[in-house]
Image 1 (spheres, one colour):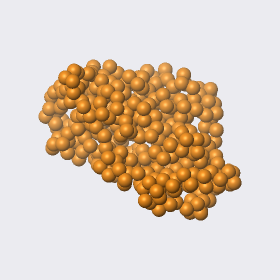
Image 2 (tube, rainbow, N blue to C red):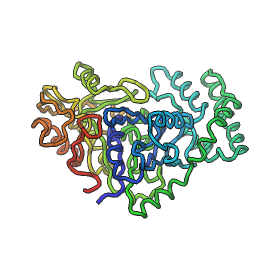
Image 3 (tube, helix red, strand yellow):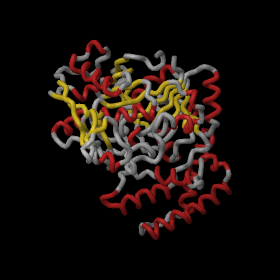
Image 4 (tube, rainbow, N blue to C red):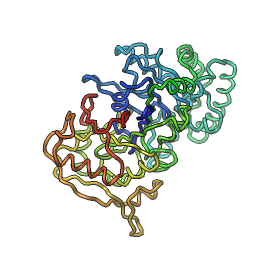
Length: 433
């Protein structure tokens, strides 16, 4: 019986992880965010009310539950406080009191955002498609061992010395490589002084808190951001995010041992989407693709950017299952497929040399050379929206899900048939299987 579950995206992000974390959180003592930044949007719908979270874990709407942000996350203090204020204004109780943040989290500061924008602007058609929120530069600072971390807010002199040193590095790049305006020390320090007194009380030894929770036999959820195919190492590099999005990153990003992670739930749409630049073998440019985008409301919850849509890619999912050790799948947005006469599933690819493969290769150049091999299944006319029992699904919808299972080699544990908590079919509950 699983006690601690890792929830990860098994495509290019935007799979609907937030709803599933919120749904599972009812049975947990805490929810832990372990990587990414405020470039990831998790949308929750409870009793018809929509909430979009960016940094705060998706369990925050459960008023007795504690939420944790681990050191694998890069934190924009301004974005974090804005999110806390939004939730408080919406009636969520004691947000700051239930939120515990590792002091080892690197901060995102104005110079990170300035460089992010300047770099993308200078690349023109070759841009990566970042959200412009400073995520990449903040992770660069972490690896370069010059990050200003949240714990540094407690030492004014140390913080000022680090800030001056970092601005020297960043302003050289901004002015001489990108012809952009420099960032001023006094401006950044004024922003820091405006938020630090609210941030400091939320800092905590997250690793020890999680250890104590596990020792008490209580359940934890570990929430990933983005998706497997955007992983910095195993995604379609360089069109990827700046952190590890895999289940294994939960251990390092939260500060818990690997053996504490009992079950990996991979979240997958019933079709495929991608935001930003990069190869996408099953992308559709026809009315079917437009229909998926319209019915699925495929616009980024944080950026508002339109998502590219395509057929379900079983070969890509096989790679995600392999490198995450996925225990069970959750298929979301099944209802978006309603009314499509024939549905295609990508079962593999033909490569430029004429050979075939049934698993997604690594790197953007290799993926760009993949031509999808399709299998066609009959669609269904009946509505699946809001269905809560597998037996109530149309026969062809059941067949579609069963074919996905057979092709990918992992069981489907949950099917989501709408955005609300209750619009969910449970085949194998992750906490009891």
